[in-house]
Image (cartoon, rainbow, N blue to C red; front, side):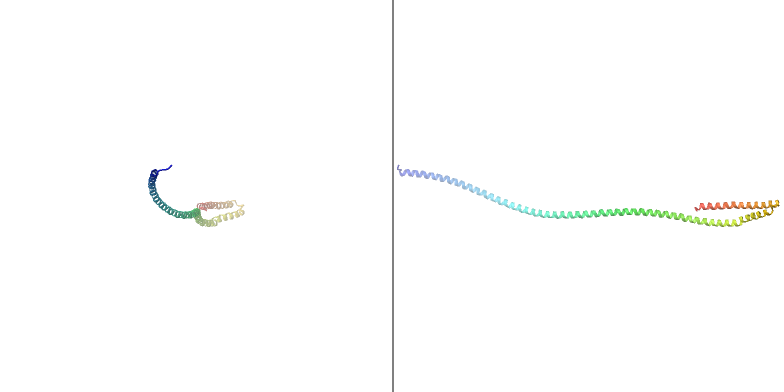
Length: 228
C-alpha cells in the first residue's frame, strides 16, 4: 500500500512528539535523579564529615586508652613494687616480731632468774641473820660461861681453902681421937671425953658439909641462870 508523504510526515511528527514526550519524561526523571543524587551527595558529605569527626574522636579515645594503658602498666609496676616492698616489710616485721618475742622470753628468763636470785639472797640474808643471832647468843653464852667459870674457879678456890682449913682439922681430930680410943679402952672417963671431942669434930664437919652443899647449890644455880 502506497503512503502519501503527508501521512508519513504525520506519523513522523507523532513519533517525534512521542520521543519528545519520552525525552521530557527522561529529563524530568534525570532532574529528579540529579536532585536525589545531589541530596545523597550532601548526605554522604555529612556522613563523611561525621565519620571524620567519629574517626578523630575514636583516634582521641584510642590515644587516651593508650595513655591509660601506659599509666595502668606503670601503676601495675608501681603496685607490684609496692607489693614486693610490703612483702619485704612483712618479712622484716616477722623477723622483728620473732626477735622481740625472743628478747621478751630472755627478759622473762632474766626476770625469773633475778626473782630466784633475790629469793636466794633473801634466804641467805635470813640465814646470815640467824647465824648472827646464833653467834650473838653463843657470844653472850660464852661471856656468861666465862663469868660463871671465873666465879666457879673462885668457888673451887674457896672450896679448896675451906676444905684445907675447915675439913682437915676435924678429920685430923677424928683420926687422932680414933687412935687414942684404942689406947684408953680401960678408962671410961677418958673414952667419954674423947667421944665428946669426936662428936664436936663431927658436928663441925657436919656444919661444913651443909655449908659446902649450899655453896655447891649456889654455884649450880648461877650456872643455870647464866645458861651454862
